[in-house]
Structures are given as structure tokens and as C-alpha cells.
Amino acid sequence: MAQTISVYDPGHFHAALLLNQRNARVNRTIHVYAPPGPDVEKFIALIESFNARAENPTDWRLECHLGADALEAMVAERPGNIVILAGRNGERLALMHRLHDEGFHVIADKPWMTDSANLPHLNAITAQMPLAVDIMVGRHSAFAKLRNAVINTPSVFGEIDRSSELPALEFTSCHHLMKLVGGQPLQRPPWFYDSRVQGDGLVDIQSHYVDQAQWLLGQGHRFDIDTDVEILAAERWTTPVPLDLFRESTGESAFPKYLAHVVEGDILQLACNGRIDYRMRGTWVRQYCDWGLREAPGGGDIQGFTARGTKAKLNVDLGPETGFQPEMRLSLHDGQDIEAAAGQWRAEFPRLEISATDEGYLLRLPPKDQVGHDAQFPLMLEQFLDLVEADAWPADLTARIRARYTLLARALDHCAATK
Image (cartoon, rainbow, N blue to C red; front, side, top):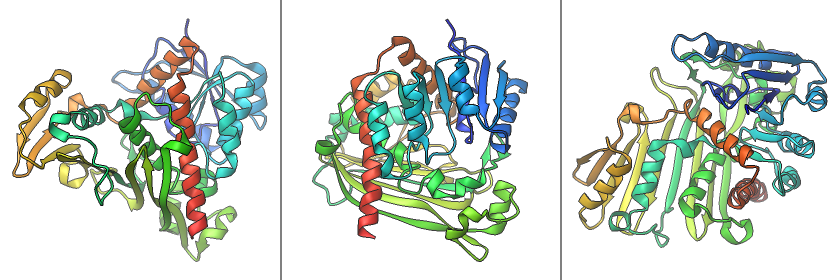
């Protein structure tokens, strides 16, 4: 039986990306509940573009319920028991708590909160069914799976080095306020520039990196925030956003009054950058994320990852130097043979390319074997539907989500306390 999905107040394009492929498990009528305005109009336009594209078009039919009382209407009419949330993050957990109490399964974009005051809602919605799951698409990346396979090969990588004077796991990235999505300039809502609504540099992109660290350090583990995690340091800083870029990215002519507290003249100080150092299950993890103004022509997000092992160091890079295709460099400490390991890796990744370098090996997957950012969202929806149909919430998933957002909340509080 096909599931009926409602989308509530879609203010981020991730809501539409979950639906960018046909899905026989989903009723083709998608119910949209939202206040009228540009946020929902952009969502509708994006879904219509999926329906109208020449290659692999979707066939969604939108039934829109627009009005100031959209939430109450959705709860009362209840066309289905699944809700997609992607947009304003500041009140996300309180909204999810309301929907949880009404019996809705929720799949929601990150981050789920912008401050630690909302943690009681997190505990409530993860205590029992129905489901509350965040959109963590990084686990569907073939390159990330290859990365994990290399790290989990003791004959080559050894063990994660917990004795190093440097972080054992290090995630870095640079994102851009002006970027292309689907070949078109991304228009951001003006509230994106309010960290009280969108979230700051310690909670937004950082949520993905915590999930990746949990994947590497405890797949299937029931995380306990008090015994498994220790915050070491946290800091955040701003990117100066000139008025002309704000105008271009939002379509607004001036900074809204609600942003006056972060505006000086024609410059908005956006608190979108951050670094968190913590120990997870005894392993030092560092997460660093900053934002630039515009991505380079033909470019995109710049990402890096380093894992330090007792026998090797693994670097994953994506950026201008790699042609914006991910590359993996394996530097060996003792010149060990990787032939047997390479055969194991190719069993899962048959077209894996391995080239010898002066320091070790370069590993690549052909583009057709990689799962791009947008293509991972329908896979996330499939995973969520599996959980809904199983009518069960795996205990390790519950614990992982609780630990993830509690870690970020504690990083926020640590930063505030040491400011």
C-alpha cells in the first residue's frame, strides 16, 4: 500500500529533493500545508520542474492547503501519517514534538535545533514511536562507504590512532552562500541569514560530521552522550555578507529589521562558521566548517577528510585540485602490501581505480559509480519508508540521534561559556 506524504512549510530545497525521483511506495498525490509566500512557491516550482524534465520525469500531483492555519489543518485533515519538514530550524524540535504527539512519523532536515533549550523535545520524540528521523544523506555515498572499508582494513590502515598529537578523524569543508542547484542560482529565504532560525556554524553542517564520526566509530553502537562523548573545544566566527550579495541571493532589497542586531552599515555578520573538537569513544575528532560568498564557476562545495591510523593516513579531498571529483590518498607508514586488501575492496567496488604514488596510493571511483548529493535524498526516503513499514525504531538509531544533537547542544554551551 502506497504511503501518503504531507509536506509542511517547506522552506528548504531538501524537502523537494526527497521527491526528485518517482517512488511506487508513495502515493503520487503529495499534500502541501504551508502559509502562503515565497518559500512554498519555490517548493512547488521545484516539484513541477521534476515533473517537466525530459529525462526520468516524476509524476507528482500537488494538493496544496495554503493558509495561516496550515498546521492545524494538516493535523485535523490528516491525509496520511508521514510528514516531511525542511525549513526554519529554530522551532523544529517543538514542532516535531507536536507532530509526534499527534501520531505522525516525521522525516526532517538538519539541524533540528539552534540552541540547547529545545533538548527536552528531543528526548520526548525519541522515547517511543512514531518515528522522528533526520535526513543524513552522507551514508548513501559510495565514496564514503569506500573510505570506511579502507579504514576498517587492519592489514593496511591498522587501527585508528588514538595516541596521536593530532585529531584521529578530521572533517573540513567550505560552502558558499551563492551557489547553483540543478544548474540554477539558489535563492535563499531571508531568514536563512538569521542564525536563531537557520542555526549557526556549530549546528548546521556540523550535524553531518557527527553522524559520519558515529558511523566510523560505532556502527550499531547504542551511543550514550555522557559516557561516549567529551567536548574539548568549540568556537564560531562570522562571514561578512555585503548587502548586494544578500539582495542577489534572496531577492530582498534591504536587510530585514529582525537582522538589525547583526548588521553594521551595509554588512551582515553571519555566524555560519565553526570548529568543534571532541572525543568520541576515546577518539579525538575535529570538525571545521566555514562559508565563502560565491562558489567558483564550475565549482561547488570544498570538502576534506583525514583519518590517522597506526599503519597509514587516509586523506579524502574534493575541490578545485581534484576537478570537484572526490579523491582518496592512502599514505603508508611501513610500505605494506595492499594487493589482498585491494581485491577485497574491488569485490564491493568493481571499478575502483588504484594508482601507486610516491607516498602510497591514489584511489578513485568513476563518476557513474558515485551517488551525487541530490541523488542520495530519494535513497534516504526509501530507508525511512522501510522503518515506517517495519513499524519499529532500531535502538541504535534512537541513541545515535539523541547523542548527535546533544553533542551539538553541548558544543554551543561550551562555546558560550568560554567566549
